[in-house]
Image (tube, rainbow, N blue to C red; front, side):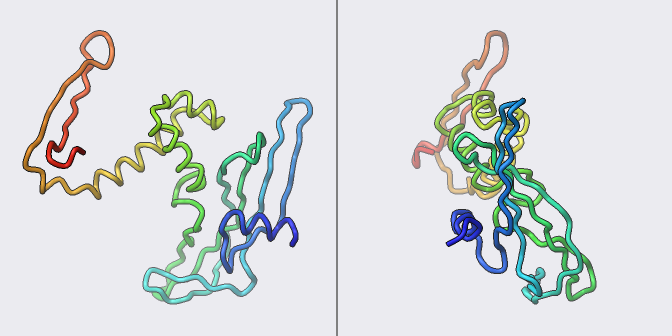
Length: 184
């Protein structure tokens, strides 16, 4: 088994996706080592549009995502993401299985950030640990909390407990709402 196959398996890539190139760069001056994985797709591959019809590749657009570190080395995924011509003649970018649209991070990176926050680690500490700007961690957090709020059905709550506490000195308060029957 070669390194490309090993990293393809580690990332959970399935056909037509595959790791095509592995580049390990080290900068002795800045003392930074980075792992760059170039992901590609099999020649002649077709990708499904919204209606599920397999469509030909129109062209590609280069994208990059930050992944979880490989030991102490920052890791980045690079891909020339295919754009397909859909059945209605429109050109649209294919969604990649390792990242959500518009994010500069892989889903595993975002999951790690959320897991650390869930363990009550401050966002600034999470950002420091993952070597990114805290605002980027807030963006990840707000995206997934927004999705969770949309998916949460509160129509069945019959007993609601409300508590308000100060979060900082002065007049900054946090209001908590709790479903008393379901303890959520």
